[in-house]
Amino acid sequence: MDQSADGKREMAAAPALAWLAGAGAAARAATRLLAATPLEARNAALRAAALALRAAEAEILAANEADLAASGSQGAFRDRLALDPTRLAAMAAGLEEIAAQPDPLGRVLAEWRRPNGLHFRRIATPIGVIGMIYESRPNVGADAAGLCLKSGNAVILRGGSESLRSARAIQAAITQGLREASLPEAAVQIAPEADRAYVGAMLEGGGVIDLIIPRGGRSLVERVQREARVPVLAHAEGLCHTYVHASADPAMARRIVANAKMRRPGVCGATETLLIDAAIAPALLPLIIADLAALGCAFRAEPRARAILPDLPAAAPADFDTEWLAPVLSVKVVDGVAEALAHIARHGSAHTEAIIAEDRAAAEAFLAGIDSAVGLWNASTQFCDGGEFGFGAEIGIATGQIHARGPVGLEQLTSFRYIVEGSGQIRP
Image 1 (spheres, rainbow, N blue to C red):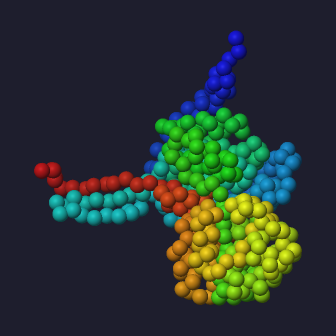
Image 2 (cartoon, one colour):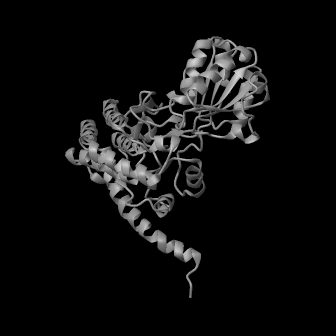
Image 3 (cartoon, rainbow, N blue to C red):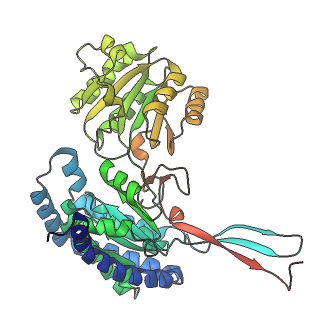
């Protein structure tokens, strides 16, 4: 008799569930040790891991080259997957920057004394065991490991099939750093295979994993949010806007828009839609479009923009809801701040928005009116990055309303508990 589809799925999931049970128990023990580990030991592990990454450059780049060859990827996807000596050096430097950050643990977040003499303190503590599910960017594993280690959390990583060789090579260097600092190697673990059963096991990991952080494409994040039985910290898309106000300095606007779109089109902080005021669009929009076209950008424009530049391709209705992650820009002419805000409210993903303006009142109205995790004034949306915020690195961008928003760094990977000190009080 043939097994049912459910039975086959259960058999396929069994190895992943067994692995997670063992990995989770080891991670739980590791986070208890990390929470009590002195700051200098955690920092020593980070610095040792950075040295190990540099020493293993040849092995990591060879693993990455094998990933690139196997994936056959091109364009923005290849850019997200690819490592080179510069990116690897930045990865190692990121761990050292995390080591240089203040200790996120043990901070007194608030304290007060009640009339009965009880003294209350709210103290920062680790969250526990973090599950990190990511796809193509190999550096995510190093950033996640470094941030979790410093904040006293253990992390269980599941990299995508396209980056598995790179992820394993990076994790080996992190493990060496833990070993040299005499910290538990189980503080940073990685799924042994890229089988999707490991994602399913982590999503069912209530009691094993305390928080899931997905980092990847829309389909991955939506699956995690739909199926997780564990709290999730995530953003679904990076549909970021740059709005050029009528008061903008033209040279600044051209420079910022070019960077916001084309510095790295495949990152979640890249601008996907340009909004420009009608008052300046006839003079400035052709210059901005020429700048971007010279950098290899393509366009999707609504009728008012095409009235100025008839050769621009017409935008389809779905284009303003599209995270391109590619050198493609949606373009719309608007009548002032109110229309720009209305467009963002209708089409945005609560990630990052920027205004370019010399008029302070207009800028403040725009920044007050958006509901996104990050708002910028006269700066590129590509500054939405934990390193640029001074966090050393980031484990992801959070766009929800609870716990953390924007780049998630050390402080956002902590929770808190209360310490109450008395002098013999009893409750009447």
